[in-house]
Length: 330
Image (tube, rainbow, N blue to C red; front, side, top):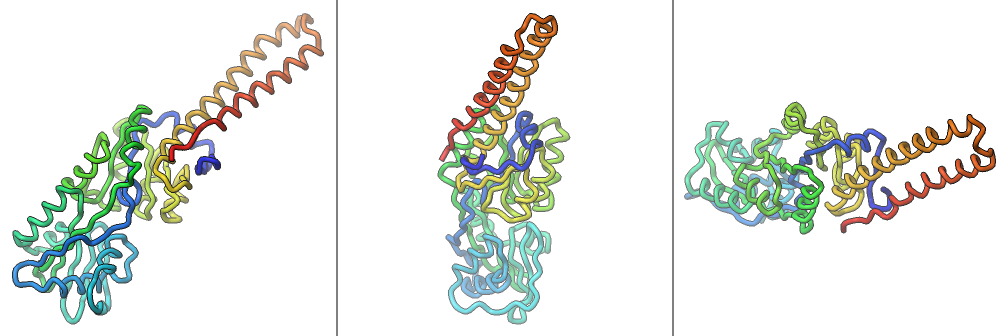
């Protein structure tokens, strides 16, 4: 495992790997690079796009979320201060900037606050979603003023890895907080069997529990703090090393190699290890069941018995060393 960039925490991971039939993959930072960039800015009629962008950056400048970082990195001009930004999980943030009430978040965040989204911004949201991009809306004093389109890139190896997991007989599920349209666009690039979109961070563990209640044996792959509960709830949790400490603490397997191919490698290695353990155990049982009665009847010379036992141990060790031939997909 160490040679392949895989840390298996304990025997429970080996047991679970032989039973899983579904792999749930978080989108951002797992199947995508997580390096988000602001690619488009659209202002509502009569609104100042630079002002709206600066106000959005004021709310997000101290956030570690990839979307917030992308908004702040692309801002032009001085970012004003926001005295008390309030983050709403899975929705956005709000606060006061230069004496104005500002909201920054997904369309649902503004709609739930009773803010009407004008047609030009709605069109931007729809067009971005059709290409797998996300749109963040900005509202100032209760009026939607701008749309900021954020792009993320699917990891080059992701489609091949998904195909490999499916080839192992596993059902693949893409899990994301993005809109259904944006999630479907990414899933079409990946080739996943199922898409679960519009999932709040607090709902990820619930989704895993529902899949398990439906009879599935679930492996969860994630990297963020929002994935920790889902990783712990799954039958087999796999955390990418690029993720947070809490995610790695919650997982059964930590994938140290910076390549998504480590996921099928980890599942494949765990399965082969489990098969090797069972094979060794079966050999030992058969060997002893056959030899003990012969020895008890006095028909087996002790020297031959000792040699045979040594050969048995040699077989087990040699059989186990075959695991070193498992190669990495990189």
